[in-house]
Amino acid sequence: MIDLKVLRENPDLVRNSQKVRGEDVAIVDQLIAADGLARTALAEFETIRAEQNVLSKAVGAAKGDEKVAILEKAKELATRVKSADSSRAEAEGKANALALQIANIIDPKAPIGGEADFVVIEEIGTPRDFSKDGFEPKDHVEIGKLIKAIDTERGAKVAGSRSYYLTGPGAMLEFALVNYAIASASKAGFIPVIPPVLVKPHAMEGTGFLGQAAENVYHLEEDDVYLVGTSEVPLAAYHMDEILDNLPIRYAGYSSCFRREAGTYGKDTRGIIRVHQFDKVEMFSFVKLEDAEAEHLRLLEWEKDFLKAMEIPFRVIDVASGDLGASAIRKFDCEAWIPTQGTYREVTSTSNCTEFQARRLNIRYRDENGTKPVATLNGTLVAIPRMIVAILENHQNEDGSVNVPPALRPFLGVDKLVCA
Image (cartoon, rainbow, N blue to C red; front, side, top):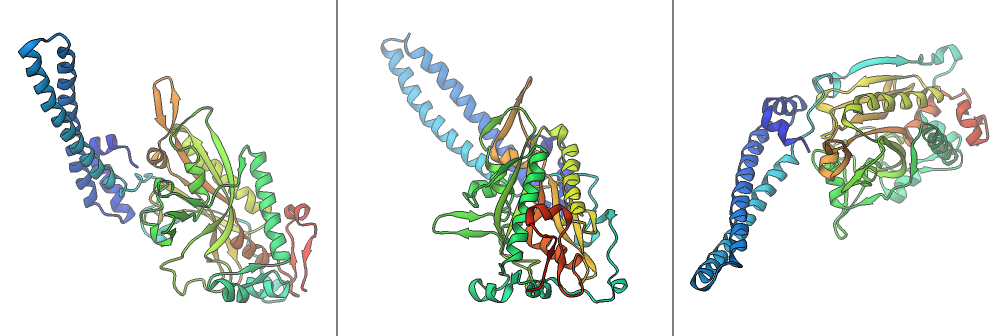
């Protein structure tokens, strides 16, 4: 949730942020009006309640007819206080509902535009020239069959489209990636966490996933809980309604993630690039607002270090305004080179959400001036299926076997995944 003080003092800043995101601008003025009504209703309630408090003190000293009159007046004020409190709650509820529909105020450094208007910050590594090796690269589905690591046919048979099994070396590769990721995160000071993947509505709403992203969320209506699309959700909500000490606090969450992939019909249907269920290690930081920008760059560096260790060519992009989630003011994606597609594909991302999620979830820290909302940031250390795709395709041999990156060999126990 945005800071309403910013809205009152600089509404054009909020209007422009909504505009460059491609979101509803008119809602800003609706919120300004609703906020004004809520503040007026609160003032009226507090005035009547103060009058009631003064009258209550006078009851004890009054006698006879005077006391009867005061008690009658007190009864009238009690009715008015109840009515004013009801009006206040209704007005504040309407204002809060509108506030929840406004995205975080975008960082002016973020590129303006849609999905294709990102800015490439850097390219790391050189895509492999398979012609020099004398063969055409196979895609990850074909390699997965040869080494018996991926089974999409049985996945579809059992669970429907965009489903898969990781078997044998595929399963072992996942375990190696997770172990390497957790070991790396722990060394960097992150606390490993295995969070719940079912969360209550407030946790999902508090992290900003029931707005523009709601269509991709699985909701179990009978129980009124949601399957998370990222462990960002339970990690952010872990400290809701708390006051934190000793910032920064950093967590590395490992969980399964679930996404409906609505609106992507016919897109990336082959293989395991865009699936309904996958496992991921997610970094999450709670910091002071003034430290958020530097923390964002640290998260990006940890992601880059992971990809370098996997010896995968990749690039870093600054995501454009229209492609940002509601909570993020700025986002960097790391995109791995996928040889058979001849392009870079997103494998990790990191977002600076400033105080937006913390205001919704009531997460604060205390300093000499009182309590303030914390800033929250997230970054994917490894999304398993896409990293497997990148490893299989970039490190393949002509016979379909795959060289294991040296960083993973201690966790996997072999230096090559061979054809079955």
